[in-house]
Each structure stands twice: as C-alpha cells, then as structure tokens.
Length: 261
Image (cartoon, rainbow, N blue to C red; front, side):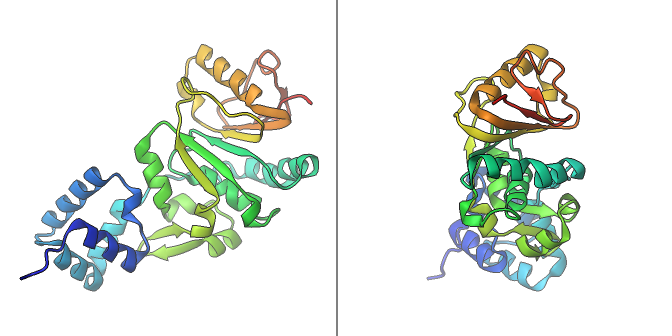
C-alpha cells in the first residue's frame, strides 16, 4: 500500500530542508496557499513537490519568497536606534540592573522586537533579555514567529549582528532561534485590553498615526501608567507627542519620552 504524503509529512520535510517551521503559520490558510502554489507548478502531491524543491533552484526560491515577509523595518530610522544603544539602554541598565522588562507594542511582523533583542545583546547576555511583543493581528504574529525576512528588510541591521544572527535560506534570511527565544508573542488590542505594568521600556512606533487624537491620548496615558518611574517610551518618527506633559511624560528628544522619576 502506498504511503499517503500528507501535510504533516510536508511540514517536517520543509523543516528538514530549510529550518522554516510551518507550524508557526495558520494551518488552514497556509495549506490552501501552498496547495495553490503546487497546482500552479503542475505538480501532484507533497512528496513530488518536496523533490522538486530539492532539485529546482527557481522553485525553491519561489517557495521561500512566498513565505518571506517583505517589510523594510529592521533598525528603521538608524539614528534613533543609535541613541537607544548609546544612551537609553545604558541609562536603564545603570538605573534598574540587567533584568529589564520591555514591551514591543503593536509589533507587526517581528522586526522590532527582534531588533530590540539584537540591540540589547551588545549590553547584556542573551539569556538575560526578555521582550514581550504584542499585536492585534494573529497572522502577523504567525509570520513574526517564523522569522523569515527579505534581504531588503534587513538592510539596516548592523553588519556584525547580521552575520551573527541571520542565516541565508535561498533569497531570504532566517533569524536565529537564540534571538527568537528571547521574544514572547501575544495577541493584544491597545484600545481594549489591559496593559501590564512595571515596564522599563515600551516601544510603539508608527502605529498610533492611524488612531484619532482621543485614542492616541488614551494610549499614551496608559503607556505612562505601564512604565516604571524613569522608564522610557520610544515612538516613531511621525508621532511626536505635542501634549507630552498633559499625558505625563518628559520629552528626552523627538522619539524618547520618559515617565518622570
């Protein structure tokens, strides 16, 4: 009797071939999309498709591209990340020690929390780094967990960190498990759900531009309460907090606001 090559077999074969974990993606949608891709290549069956991926470079690249997130977000606005590296992180470590509680809010496809892990890795051993990352969208969280990025999206990553923490797979780059392990992803709605407290740093960039002024103020006030006194909020380049005193912050510069001590 011939063995049926099912999707479970396929996921394992893909993991062996690429170290991409398809379990990180939503099963129904991903299976449907892969089935479409297989049919488009006029192949019947997962086993034949796996064999084709092994022997046909173009098909392999097409498949990896298909799973890859095309965002150009890693280390977006490099000057701000430099400031984080040179001033903010050292200040936080000096004030609070090594066990920093950090939240990447509305983290999208993971580039931001992973950038934070890499930035912190210059100051702390990896096993002491923990980032909480949240987003509203289940699908982007699934992509973030898979951690596969296009060349363009990691262009901003400093060369030493790129070499240390990324592996090239076909045309794309996979972030290392040691970085992934430092991030805990969860679904969270900034406008509805409760916020944890005692954060030393909250990063929320280029998201609030989509909110009304009232909603923005509400989120900033809630961030302020979530931070420890002396903690920082790091926002995007388009989002200066005009009324920062009203919502309880001191402005350190255009992108970093501190909850007063």
